[in-house]
Image 1 (tube, rainbow, N blue to C red):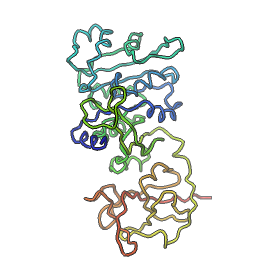
Image 2: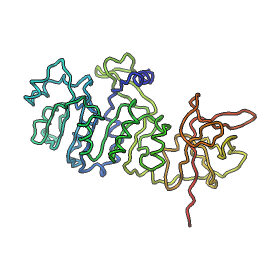
Image 3: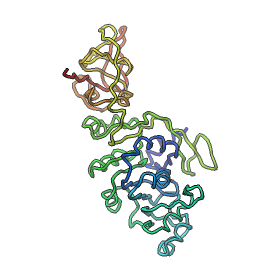
Image 4: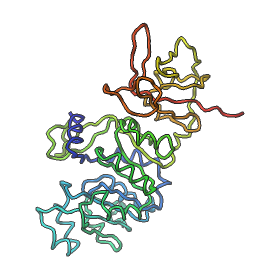
Length: 358
């Protein structure tokens, strides 16, 4: 049900799904040293709803963050309704009413522990913005990540961490690349087949994070009619094929894949219209073959740029174009004959082994 809702959301450009804290913590725990002392920008995150903001506020001192910035988009169902927060700023109190919604930004430079056990109660965002150096201000515009005032905050930041609207994923990534920003973001695995994303992977400007092809649970907006379950009054839906994308170095992209299988032309058939062999399982990539191979998308989880070269995905009946465009069936146009039947492998990525000099 949730997956169908996501499809409708993409069509309607309605993408507000709130990531659960457990999924954020699991991924970000791998980047502790890279995040330390940085300016973090969560530019698709209402502080009252975003667990990205909550995670970094809770770990602010542990990571020694220089600053945490969060901006929300003004159609957010929460923006402008939390009046206790705006009581902190007299100016905001004058311009905000319970029935109006405005985009705003929160900047945190100091987080003081105040519970007896030293923990921070982040349900009280008001507490955070009362400290010197912390502030909440209205944005002039909508809070869209493409607006000039949000771009200025982007320029100030070191690392962007968020779950951007998946209908705007390509535009979102393009902006991060344009401004040469480090990032850890969530996206759909199908993005790997977009020519803009695949090109960045080939150019070693983007790669998959530690979480790959996950099924995650997201908090859904109240107006959504379909969900999987309700927890504490909130609708939760399961969404498959979620993958983390980053340009921060990861340990796994330097791990050499252990190859054990031997090549044989009887087992590894060649495509009819491309000089490449079909490898149906990543674990069965032959150790003694250096020509082109077609492998499943899951290869990118284990892709080591020192061990393999990404060629592309063949398109067109000739098989000569190496791009990422799918045909009308949503499949790549390479054909494989097996037992007199011609099949079209779904989503094959063409790769080659790199030869290392002894």
